[in-house]
Image (cartoon, rainbow, N blue to C red; front, side, top):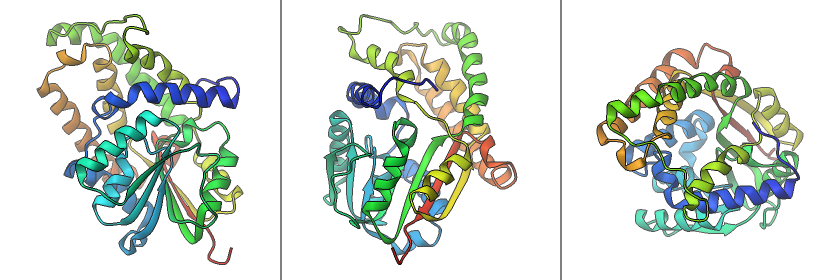
Amino acid sequence: MQALRSDEQIREVNTRYHDVAASGYDRKWGIDFGPTGRAQVLAKARKGLGARLDHGFARALEVGAGTGYFGLHLTQAGFIAELTCTDISAGMLEALGANAGRLGLETVQTVRADAERLPFADRSFDLVLGHAILHHLPDLDRAFGEFRRVLRPGGRILFAGEPSSLGDRIARLPKRAALLAAPLWRRALGAAPIDTPDDQQQPAAGAHRLEAEVDIHTFTPGQLERLARGAGLVDVDVRGEELLANWFGWFNRGLEATAADTDVPWWWRQYAFRGYLCLQKLDRAALEPHLPTGLFYNLLLTGGRPEDS
């Protein structure tokens, strides 16, 4: 991951990138608000929260919520009664609000906020959650302090989709392989190479260039655990997710990123998506229970605020 300049510059680049990327974000990353996407989210939540999920959460805060993938599914499934979603990007919150409206969710509110300076009272939420957000934050110690502060005693945190240091290094191999294979792949599909127009004329192109700058951390499992425990959280657990599915997914995404979006056929997208789901099931059943946590690409972190604090 690339180290950026000051904390404020990191926040500014994150805001700019996500504002521009918001309108096409769900399509780019295959974010699904139907039954398949909900099953994905609930499986992760069940893995992290166990039986606690069945009791539900009266008030939850999703930090760096993006377009709402994690929190909206949990709310629609009835596990969250009232959901507050924050993001540093106004564009992402606008997209999230539109998604919540389409899903008919009336107990969701959005607040533009920095994860390191949450504008909420102490002990406000039963659950603080996020998906693929921690690796964007410059001041992680401060952020975890905020997560604990706004949690009620006995409340839980759930963060998923955080890149592991070793898993990220391994993932560079399928990414490089995709770049080598891309010309042949495009020729076979009859897809034109993606244009690279001036950023002022095509803001999406500028967002693509900024993407490498907004991912500023990878983590070992021990680093995530120390951050959570250092903030005063207890019952901390870090698990690994996705190995084969990740290699398959990054290879296919690497290919797709080189082609004009409208030239990638429907059947290819179905193959890539369904293949990913099949390998994800294999990872869960055969690999995740037995291999070292840090080997996997994604890390899932859970913990809680002590009842007596």
